[in-house]
Image (cartoon, rainbow, N blue to C red; front, side, top):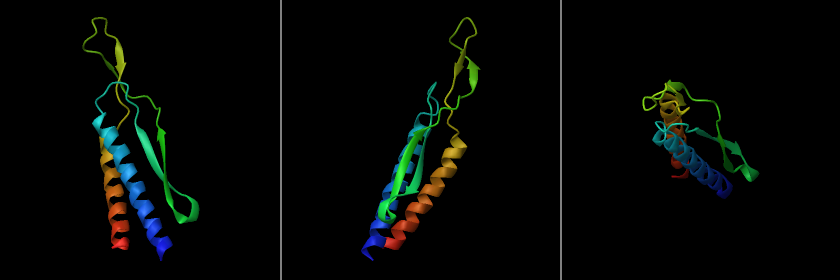
Length: 103
């Protein structure tokens, strides 16, 4: 029983980390050249849940820089707000499910 609760507690922490990474992506979505990160939950030792965070280096869209007089292009963030919001729903539901088991 204790192992199950420990597993659920580690899952709560993992879902919290995923939400924090996604929130950081959303907060920086309008920052030029920002590269989003992705947090993936994996099974660790003894049934614990661990989070692996990686930076996604795909290029963001190129747009004409309105501050440039020569028409230079600048790269925007590669963050997709719609993707982040749907991920946040998944993280929230995973958090709620694990909290309910502990309760």
